[in-house]
Amino acid sequence: MLHQSVRKKVFYLLTAALTMFCSEVSANASAQDVHELADICMYSQRILKDYALVGMSVTYHDPKKDLKENINIVDKYFKDIEGHKLNEKLLAEVLEVENSWKAIRPAFEQEPDKKKMSELREKVEAYTTRCDQVADDLAKDTGIKGEQDVVLVSELGLESQRLAALYLMKAWGVADTSYEKEVAQTVDQTEHLYQELMAADEKFVSKDIKDKLKTTENEFIAFGVMAKSTSGRFMPSMAEKSASKIFTTLREILAMEQKLVEATVSGYFTPVADEKKNRGMILKDIITLIQYREEESA
Image (cartoon, rainbow, N blue to C red; front, side, top):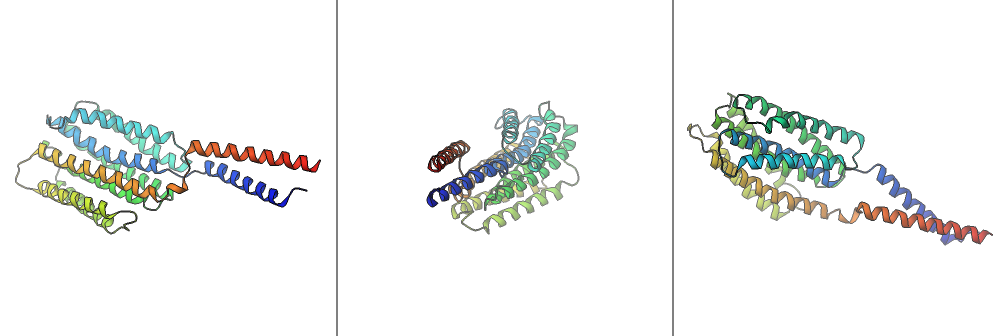
């Protein structure tokens, strides 16, 4: 008869092996998936802003170079996400967003056309709205508490670039009659995001992060005042400087937020390479125990 302690060990190892195999099949979205898609959403509005700057022949910060680099970043992130283990539903959502990107991407590689700017912006708006929704779906699917706060920070980055794109469109002479309304909506949405993050549990949005958020909020308010101005004078280089400063700071905040949120779950996740190694060791132990049982029964 197999000794009771050995039977218990066999049962434990079989349970562990089954858990590992099942977890691989039904793997949730990862934090990296969320981060990369959130970046995609942010960079899309930034690309639109750079498109307007190139069209206006503004050379501050070399928008033509930024435009090319940011397009490559978006392409890379989509490729990365496709290579990860997403379930069928989430992968379909990501591919939907990617197809929208592929439909508008060629326009950004051509010489900016003032006549097509409004139509292009409408497509980008529809695309980024859906992108945000999918990023939120990925965040929920991770099962990581606080991961949706990461998405909120990325939305702040998106809104700052949206405001810059709106302002530069008007400066270029292509803004329509809804400009004031859209600027007001962007400012209101940004304030709502700041309030939500400032009210969050400090376990997920720390005091240091909130202090840094307050700084960017003040900078955004100043930028909003400039965008709402009715003086008829435009300062595209100043707008680019403000938008890029806010974007850079929010990228720093995003990195802090990601590190904070993921630290709360670091003990529960096993790297894929280690996971495969552990499965192999467990299966080896099971085979050894089975052989032991056969020898004992003989």
